[in-house]
Image (cartoon, rainbow, N blue to C red; front, side, top):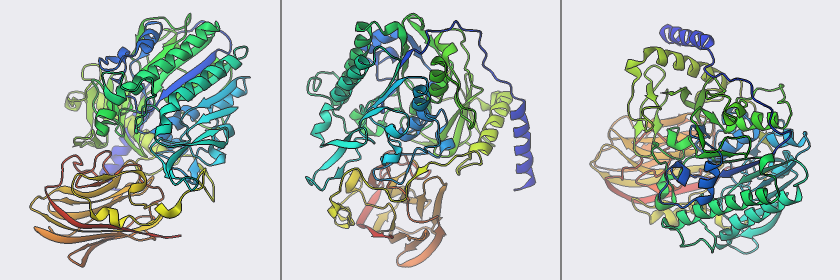
Length: 634
């Protein structure tokens, strides 16, 4: 490392050590002993999707009432994607600390580690009945399911509702509805229409059955993740299409839960929190939701990707009609819930969250943590203290990639600029120095692109299997489908090339006068690959889970017409050829260890870009004879 860079890091680390906590609180009167706790966790709901946060498209009378009777938390943070947020809820840690930087897939070998203390385990130790109802998404092997991590019972989908696989038993694409550790039903697309009602009925039953003892109900809805599946009674009833229908069904579900608590005289004994796992999936158009005044959406660390609509309701404890703008987040659930239950958070491992009950009780208006850190995978992209948010890495809002680095960060005052449009770093040198020091210290602990020294391992099994037998006829290559695609086309789910654990070859002919543009892209958030043009040169990029993007580039521009071939071998060797001549080589750790979550896109990159290009701009030219070949490596 050059001496100037080393000196820079030393100065910033020293400043971090000297930075004081910015939050403080006064004593709080003790709440009722061992209150019931209900956590309603929505999937992909945006900051602007419900009435209390400004939505005029979706009717949410129950959430409106919940906010009027409780508190809105207006700076409440999750993570950019599903599994990471759920890991944070369970462990009280940022996803990277527990080696969960991205999304898990059906039949995967990794999941939540049994050594981690989950909030359910700690509440169960205090005598709580515990149940998880809904989307788990922390691994689908028996070792990873909720019943192995502190929950007495489980009912729900073990992963996202778009992760459908073709079942051997009926030859249809399905997702498994699991009760405890057994598949109780295989749901087709139409079968998913019943999910919100199934979850809600089970939640009401659990509350009723446990009304005489403390309980923890974790209710992570499948809604409103695509594919959108509102129930029959709600379909076509909203003014905002199928997405609005499902939002309104979620509101109905919340209303039923709160009504049951009132009916059983449990309202004053129960803390209920409503929140979401990440921002809206903006690339899904009408099915993607709204971030309201915030910039960006799902997959990003702009506020729209991670700041969630959050409401806390506890009659007699949380003052009605209030709002709190202090930074808090789902890493704070574990220490808060355990403290309210009269327990102690084990000290054998570090967690990142803090008890934020002083905010709920109105005893403080300051964050209970020194800072909030915005991780995307293992990459630290920003840090917030008070109103100040410092971006220290490039961020993508789906429309453009905005540059930033430790040496040249961007600074936003979120109190004055909620949409993150005005960089004030040049006018706030002291703030930049202070927050940059915190970012350097955290990156040194958890890593910055790769896992750091304080990262703990994820759970692992040697021989993973899907929860139901698959029709393996779909596992072959998809070259025939690929050949007919044109610019703007996408393949999703099982239609996309099956690349996990496989050697990969991309071949095509391009004709263009443009210097820049995506040819093909598949994946992005933690795993993926892309072939694109930059400054007229061909680039092949591979994003291996948990690592930085590796790219190889042709040494010169390819010309107006060219035949391109990109290969990723089983041992991780990358090669790029132009007109039959090998022009660049590189290496990653091996074949992709995960199947990319995002769609396979031709001529653009619709969601979370694999590399730092403009994925939304369509390729200005012709892509012909596109072939993607895969070959099993084991």
